[in-house]
Each structure stands twice: as C-alpha cells, then as structure tokens.
Image 1 (cartoon, rainbow, N blue to C red):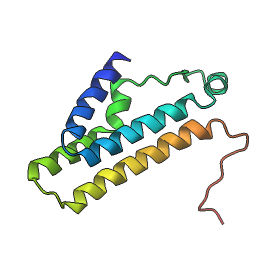
Image 2: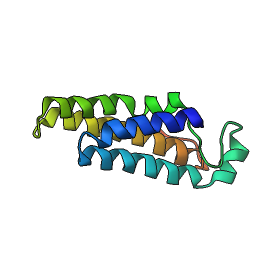
Image 3: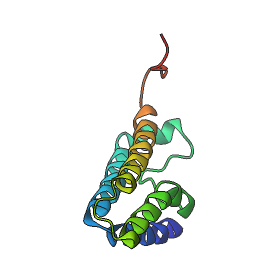
Image 4: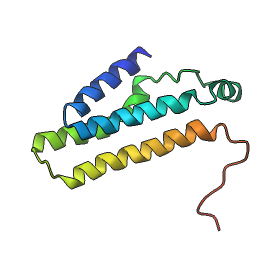
Amino acid sequence: SRSGGVAAFVVAVMTCGSHVKFGVTLLSFYQTGSWLTRVGAKRKMRLDANSTEHGNRDAAQVLSCSLLAAILAVVHRAKGCGACENLTAAFVGFFACCAGDTWASELGTLARTSPRLVTAP
C-alpha cells in the first residue's frame, strides 16, 4: 500500500543512514519476507481470505516490524559508538524475532499438519 511504502522508505533512511550493518539487516529481513510471501501464494489465498499474492503491507504493519529497530539504529549513530554491542544486539535480536514470526506465518500457513508446541514433552 502507499502508506506501507512511505513507512518503509522512512525506516530504510533511518536505518541505512545509521550504519551499513543495520541497513543490510533491514533489507535482508524485508527481502526474505517478500520472497516467502510469494511461496505458495495461490494456496494461501484459498486458505486465507486476507492473504494477497504480493503481500502488500500498510504503515502499521511496516512500523510494527521495524520502527523500534530503526530507533535503535539512530540512537547507535547519535551516540557515535562503533562498539555499542548492546544496541547492535538489540537491533539484531529484534529482527530475529520479527523474522521468526514472519517466516512462521508465511510458511506455517502452507503446512498440511497441525502445529506442534516445541516445548511440550
């Protein structure tokens, strides 16, 4: 959607302008999510009325999966700390969590069996 495109642009400028490592992480998250949205798109549309073939996102979806990380990147840049391991770890951890959720949603929809709780005995 238009709002999603604008939000993604703002987040990308904030993130990529902070450091290349943050930009690469952000773009990798966006790209893998886009690829996985297309996997089995026709089947997903049959199973879920809200599914779209191209996976358009609105601003709320984009910001929920990237705004906090963009703020962490900007703070990292503002502090001028090339070795702020905690901010870098928080940034990467945030995207690891979001990627896990996104990938599980995109691929889990295609599963032919019920999900199982990995922490169950």
